[in-house]
Length: 137
Image 1 (cartoon, rainbow, N blue to C red):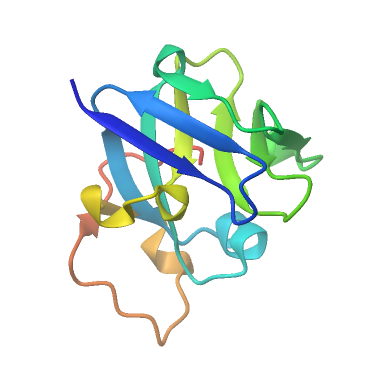
Image 2: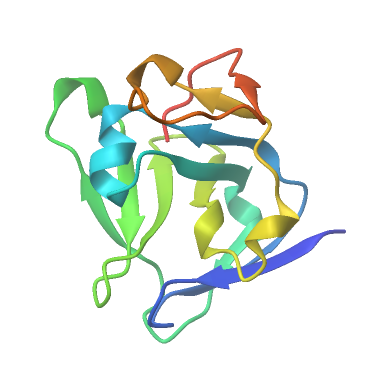
C-alpha cells in the first residue's frame, strides 16, 4: 500500500495518507488561483478515511465560501502560516490534498487540467490533458 506524508510550511498541520491517489490534476479555476495566489494549483484525491492529521495543529482550519457556486465544500488551511492544504466536499468520501504540501510532491504527477479556459493567457500547461469532468477542488 502506498504511503505519503506532508504538511504546511510551518509544520503546524501534518498528515499521513495510506492508499491509492485518485484524480491527480492541475486546477486553473479562478477560485483556486485566488486561494493559492498561483496560476495553477495541483490537487490529488484520497479516501477521507486514509488521511490522518497528526501535527500539533490537528486538522486544518476550514473556510466555507459564501458564493452560491461554491456551496457544499470547504477549503482547509493552516491557521498559522496560511498554507492551502485540502478541500472537502460535503458528504464526499474523498478529500483533495494540495500536491505542493506533499513531502515529495514529485511522487504524484497531475494527469489532467481542470478549467483550462480560466488559465492566464501566458500559462502553457502541455504535460496534462483537459479533465474529463470538472472536480470541486
